[in-house]
Length: 166
Image (cartoon, rainbow, N blue to C red; front, top):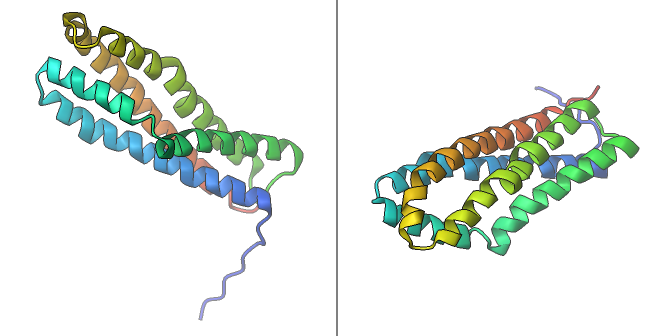
């Protein structure tokens, strides 16, 4: 019979683990987008792909998606604040690295890179400029989405690894 000893969790550990789950979920969403949605858009004519992407960009603004995306960013901010004030059971440095990875590589990249491209695509509407912009948009947006995917999954891994007591 195997006996496991667990270290009692503090509330700060719960915050860190919630951030890990959120980062993993968001990394998974971006992964699916990279390997499924973008591949499906490639099967469409450019005008259809632009229309589909514009519809996706409107749909993504749902409360549930934003709860996961922004909520995880807020949890990661809490991880950094707690690390500076209260600490965790486990590795504080690894937890902070995970939180910062999500904040910069997922949340920050989205705000600074993906959203402006989404806005530009939306401004074109159904015009020929939008269709002409599609190939540039698709290439640049996809590259950044791959980074967001890796950052979300990497953040989840780091935040989870931070559980190991020091």
